[in-house]
Length: 180
Image (cartoon, helix red, strand yellow):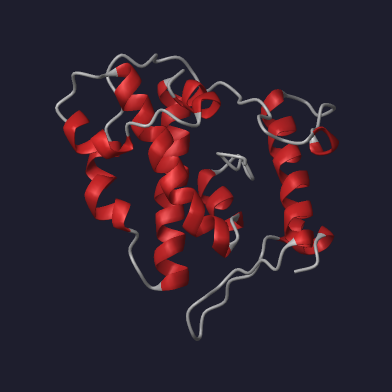
């Protein structure tokens, strides 16, 4: 299973592109990755006790990327934030990690590099969806994840929910190529 869906360079748009199932499933996965970064980089932090239930150190490819630079951590944190907003918008509910961890995970772990954003790789993407011919690694990663996601949408009955009277549809790049 893919542990971070890089569906857009903008974390807000990437969150918007997550189907309902992944809005629900990926909040805990992204929570775990952010918590792992704290556990690995700043194990003596005052917030670690409150993150202990998330000390599983799974999703290590993604955790390695997130803890590599402050900008990487912030990108995933922003995706997590906007995914929480999507959860609230689509399901009229607040995910339990929001109240419990928002303030904690909004603090970048100590001992993280101040270096610039580093493009992620295409972890866990089946070879037939991997993109290699675009301008840079990040564009390739987004394209590879979109290729995979379009296939996922075609094979599953995915939905983008919205409360009564509101409009929420799949992103145009999914509508164009997937049966949604």
